[in-house]
Image (cartoon, rainbow over all chains, first blue to last red; front, side, top):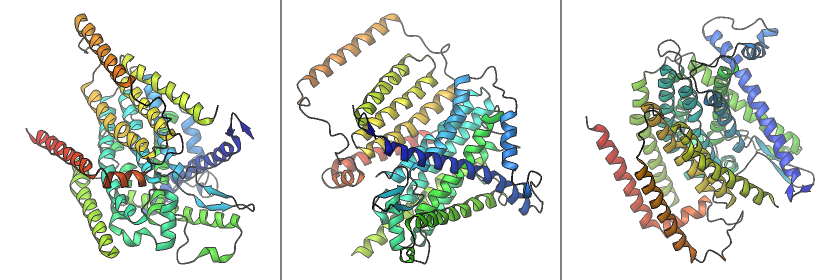
Length: 350
Length: 166
């Protein structure tokens, strides 16, 4: 099927994959909110949500419904277009990153053609993730500014400078990984880990730096100053109500999901099953893809749990502590990690 | 018309329209946002030429970092059209004349370049991929590359020195 010399089957296939991934992101984000409340309850010796359905399993649906039906308030003095654009941008940037993540082992059809379980296996893979992360600041800044509230604006600027600061050590930590793979392509990063072992073995320090930065980029505790309710006046979404507020909160959970996926892919072998060579099992390609997808999801779930675990264990940083940690500790540490990795690799090659 | 051509025309229209909006918007925040749209459209053009690294770096550096700083400054200074200083009419006319002269010089300079019979490599050129670009930068052009990195370092040191002054 070719129209205007466009291969429509290709576009249709990608559209289905994109729809599936977006649906999955929403589903996971929904149930992360549920998990957040359940984990908090366990850690605080409570029961957590248990009214809607068995074990409160329909709680996220109830929460979402409530947000949709709440009164929507747009402040009179706000900038209406940008006020609406802000949460939309936050959501879009949260979702776009998922395009380059290989979600499962490539699916080989009977005809021998390979269908990658990845929307775009571009040469720039991991850099694309970074570009989207760096653009992700706009959702916060535009929303905070358009609210026409100085507390929102201050919180938006606080959030933006936090995200800009923690991008740097994140990138520096990743460079050390890229030394080993020699490629920015996500599929290549996973393949090199399947062959040579996971990057976490070679780059434990790099992973810790990356993880701390991921916490900061997702505005999660201990770096959740942009939305510190009690001491900093609720943050950049102070004027938002109804589903616009929901979009901001939801985008945070999608960001958590995607950054867990990135960490699993870059440091923990992606869809690779540890300690075994699954290609010798003789499974059909369909089940191979399914199992590898399940393995990736298990790794992502573990990271999501760690995110929640940290939130209910560690108190919040002060803003100057946050900036000192980012600029004076993490960046030098990441630089040292990078230089030492480079030196070791050079020595081993000789 | 292939998809490359459709995308080319679409991106060109977006780039031109948003570039016009940058200079016609009254509110400086809108100008910055339209400029970001322009950068995205230009990055799309780079991708059509398979210059993927350039496209991504354009977004990271310009749309993601420099424009954020622009927004910071504009939002913190709370610029709006009432407080915007209006230049006198003579100055505006002088600006138009100067811009027209620059256009004339550019047209004169570009008129005789041999770009006419050189076709842009669409979708197939691979010098823009990071492997080839990195090899070129670190072998053929290593000296200019390092010199420009020194330039950046000095700019960074300068910024720190200015920032430290009370």
